[in-house]
Length: 505
Image 1 (cartoon, helix red, strand yellow):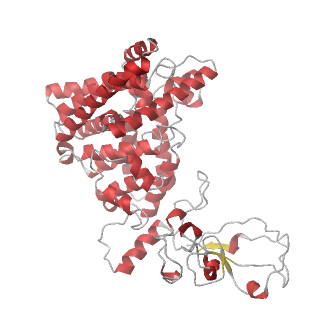
Image 2 (cartoon, rainbow, N blue to C red):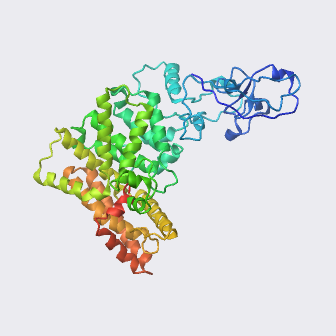
Image 3 (cartoon, rainbow, N blue to C red):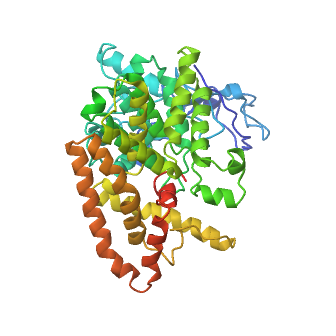
């Protein structure tokens, strides 16, 4: 399939040699680019981004020069849509969401390695034009059967990221490092890898291109300018969800349908988060607050946004209509469970089940409830990570709180709890959050799943809380208000703390 795009007017007035006019030009993406070292002068025509006249260059963006004279190119000359074509069997339609004209085709991954000029013929340089083409060509070239595992990442360009994915089930998984190694595409690569690892792509017969497009759109709909509620947070929650799905009680009872829902809910649970909480949207008369009648405003928006992308990409178009609708409904049930204002409701119900020992994972409704609790844990698990990771998340979420507080000050609005940088510190915010929100939830989760992972999380939680406590006297010593504020916030079951810190609101 070929993609065509309009190029701007090129008002050139200098003579063009006859031998140039008689041949096709091409914008070359050769690996001899200066980005990979100085090219040989004789190979300048093959440089990345340069004009190439070698029609055998299968990686170039070919241009047919039309409406030219023997001496000059007319100032009003325009390349028509049919003049530019991507030499690719499979491509992605341009989308309104992204500024990049080739959605899903990351040109940063076109080159597998920096080849020295002339060391290998240009036609042998491996390039990734599209996800689907790379998968097919790599299998055919190696003579590998179709049963081989899918190659999610380019082996040379993202080799380190691929090594990290081999330990994706480790609680020490560094999502920040993984995001750097994947050039900011951690959510796409991690979610795709997990869906493939669980065999869900094959089981539900998901179209590879549609799935890739869906994940790219999901990642793009997260706001990277948010310090905390961004695609990296979604990837972190998805990785945590994977760790919980592997716990013995869940691994032995969950169906493939449950796992699919759990991973999709984790990846989309904060979709299109604006970086402010629900009370802020309500007091500023935001249209979302009016739309959802001030009830689970952000959670409803995340869910509806996810459903919109599922329908736009037709990811489940191969499934019966009733199954597709069931996925959408249950996805909403999971995402809505992350509403912090309902924290006590879910925690009390969970505690009652554990006290009465009546949770039956053979029951579909009970399994779904456990998935809801798992997603709630995954969403606020940052304090249970190793200190090096937990500290970074704490700084990011507090930065987002304080940014909201600055906006409220600027517009003379009442400053939300925990959002006043003059009355709170990172340490005080985190101690209150851990004490009144995280500890009660993870204590009950450890009762449900008393495993090494649960004990590890509680251990990290205790150490991290002690670390912040040691910092608080220094941070708040100059102001006694800094210590009183956390107590005030926690009286509302930390609902507002969690609302931003945990996930949505």
